[in-house]
Structures are given as structure tokens and as C-alpha cells.
Amino acid sequence: MHEFSIVQNLLDLIERYARKNRAERVTEIVVSVGVLSGVEPHLLKVAFDTFKEGTVAESAELVIEIEKLDLRCRDCGKVSGLEEPRFVCPFCGSLNTEASGGDGLILKRLEMECHEGSAEGKN
Amino acid sequence: MCSECGCGHTKKILEVSSKILEENDLQAEKNREHFSRHHILAVNLMSSPGAGKTTLLEKTADLLRGEFRIGVVEGDLETSRDTDRLRARGVPVVQITTGQACHLDAFMVHEGIHSLPLEDLDIVFIENVGNLVCPASYDVGAHLNVVLLSVTEGDDKPEKYPIIFRSADLMLITKTDLLPYVDFSIERAVKLAKTVNPSIDVILVSSKTEEGMEEWLNYIKKRLGA
Image 1 (tube, rainbow over the protein chains, first blue to last red):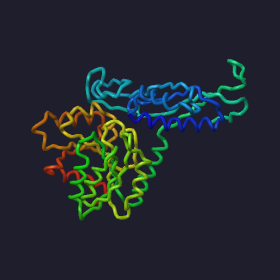
Image 2 (cartoon, one colour):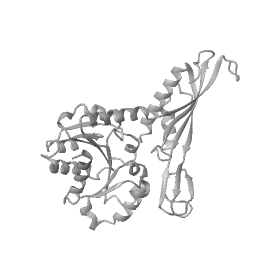
Image 3 (cartoon, rainbow over the protein chains, first blue to last red):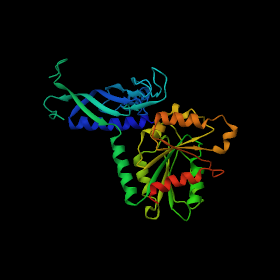
């Protein structure tokens, strides 16, 4: 259950962006979780909702996007985008596959409320 | 002004692309450089509890004595039992009691290595917390990541815990002296591990009979440039 540790890192990042942009509150954040990142989306959400209390993201909603794993089958040649860490070709059942992608764990977007005129320019 | 209620706030959407574990990854890189500066090979050992990490280290320490000097960073939830076992063999050990944390991260290892006599060491083993899930997400700054799979755990583990087997350079199949008593197919375990990680190396080892120990030690020595 390392999702609690990961949420601490995530909240640190959010606080940093919020401060830089003089945001009063963060209302939504979008995180991309790769299926091979070792992070369980449901647990990440539970951990986020537990630890956001008292932070600038207290009222923020966490939106999780799943980064798929691309599996190329060396036998039938088909490519599949999988939302779970499986390495068996869903078309022909072969184990002779090559996986790529799906290992990211990335904060992609923050939606925040800033005082008029106080936000810095582009980031 | 806020278009919804006229409250004087502005809504701002910020597109970023920040790795959530970036701080850890940066520290891990620093750890790796720190080890390299001291000409030390750092080896991260990961496995489920009871796969034989500490016993492997005891045997490794015995067999390398006089040839290479090893130190250990020991991650343990509570007790110092593993640390005591290794100290009894004269190995410098620094224990990191992780409390509730289920893994070591690069910052914990960084703290640990400053308590080791690095000038006197050739190899530092990082014995991670016994867990096949959480340690996979954290780069601790080792040069070599090793996952142990004991034959009593079952040959299906690489498929069940693909992420940790994907993060490893080497899979050590341990307790092979017990093979006659368990239904464990080496062939199946290797096939599954190679499926999730085609470049993973495999060595079969028994700390008890010392079968495979030489191959394991040679694997390490090769990376030491020895």
C-alpha cells in the first residue's frame, strides 16, 4: 500500500504549482496512471481523499486517466492496448509478446482558482 | 472575473507533465553516482517475505570474505533480527526501520549509506522490505535490481506480480534444494518472467547446499569489473 506515500509526493507537487500561481484553491487535478506503474487507481483515490484535507487541494477532485500498455504479438502481429498488466495476446493467446508504455505516473493538469490578476503568466 | 458567480476569482487550467516520483528519481540518481564515485556496486534485493534474502546475504558474505568487502542497507518494518544476523558475520550493516512503510525509497537509502564505511567497501546490498508490490515503484539508486523467487512460493508469481519482475535485471530462483518437495516448474517460472521482461537474467540458487552460488557470485563480480 505505497499509494499513501505517492499521494504525499503528489500533494507536494500540487502545493508547489499552486504557490507559484498564487492559487487560492485547486479544484481538479488530472493524473495519468500507467498500468505498469505499480499504482492501484482506486487506492490512489482513497489515499488522495484522505490526505488532501487541510491542503490547497482540499476540495479538489482527482481525475485518473489510465495509460495503457501496448502489447505487440510476435506471432499474430496484432497490437493491443491493455488496461491491465497482462502480457498474453488477447487475439491469439500467445505469450510471445512485446510490451511498451504504461509505466508512467504523471500529474498532467491542475484546475485552480486564482485571484484576478494575481496569476503569473504562462508556465 | 469568475464566470459562474462573479466572485472575483479567475479559473486557471495549468497543463503540466510532472512525474509524481520525480524527487525520488533524482535522489536515486544521486545515490547511484555516490556509489559509483566510491567504486561501489550497489545491488537492490527485492522479494516477498521469507524468500531468503538475508540467508542469501549471509552466504554471500561468507563466500566473498577476503576477496570483496560488502556492506548492507537493511530495510525492515520493525525488528533488527536481520541486521543482527549479518552483523554477527562481521558485515557492516545500517538498518532502516521503515515503520509502516512497505518499501525503501531513495531518500531512506541516502540516509543509510552515510552510516556505512563506503571507503572500505566494494559492494553494498540494499535489502528491501519483503514485498512483491510496493518496492517495484521506487528506484533506490542501485546499479543492479534483483528479485528473488523461492520455489515454495509457486511458479506463477512473475505473472501475478509482473511489475516487480519487469523492474529487475536478474531473477534468482531460491531454495532450489526444496524442488523435489514442491510443485514448482522452473521452466514455467522462467517463461513467465521472460514474458513480462524479455531481458531478465535467471540464476537458480540454494543458499543451503550452495548450488548456484558460484554463478551468482560471478554475476556480481562481472559487474564489479573484477
